[in-house]
Length: 162
Image (cartoon, rainbow, N blue to C red; front, side, top):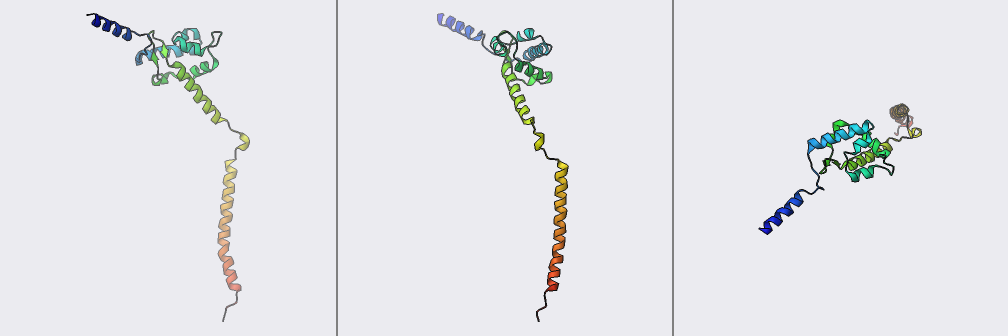
């Protein structure tokens, strides 16, 4: 009897552990939409109540303000893409994994921003390049057409061997 009671107590403790992440898509979606709407409206204090304390600390500076990189990452979130995000909720219904998504968004944005930088002095005018190519092709065609004439003239100038 004591073993059964001890086994039930251990099972209960493991089942009620607060560190588990729930994957309830509907509830997660609702919490994430609430977070994004509050944050994009400028209500950061209320929005950060939907985030786990660990991620909240990582997203804020020492004065309690959200870091600019996370503000811009949240501003880029579209409500239509929230269901595709890999998020969960902790035991108290707060978002888990948000900071990873925001960091990924920032990394993607930085990478795309670096690719967009173009030095205008190195750009070629495509119309000029096309015209040069057409002129070279026309010149080559003239040379090819003149070559048989030159050979014929050379053959006519040679004396016939008798």
